[in-house]
Length: 78
Image 1 (tube, rainbow, N blue to C red):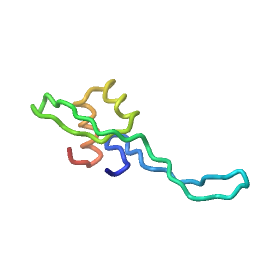
Image 2 (image 1 turned 135 degrees about the vertical axis):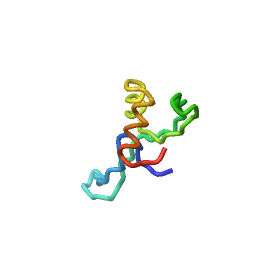
Image 3 (image 1 turned 45 degrees about the vertical axis):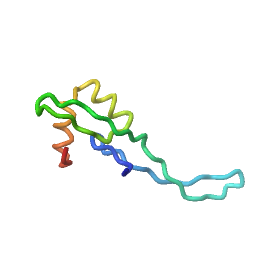
């Protein structure tokens, strides 16, 4: 599963682990990605979305129809 959110576009960030001796090694900061299934009443079907935890809360606030509209506006197929 790719580590990016369909709604917010959150992707991994990159940086360094810094040890006690201050040596640096590369690392990734992955977003908290979840696969969630929603009922889309306008189309009469379920959709499975790959969302960050923050985006799941956003869908709860704005509704699944508006969220899918935003995802489609970003050019992502749902």
